[in-house]
Length: 77
Image: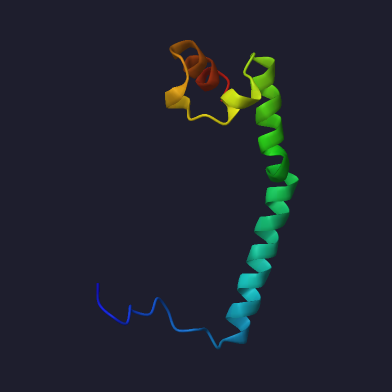
């Protein structure tokens, strides 16, 4: 590794580009909210609970589940 590390980018001084980026971010955030992005984890947990998963199972990697549990988690995704 070289020191000092290379700069990733020069800070922008273009006000129009900055405002465009803020507008694009706002649009993306609005779309994320409209599609239920903040509630997706709760919805996933509700579905998994309906399939018989415990809360402990929900926090485990799929590779650690039994074959049946891993199959069930994939079939409803």
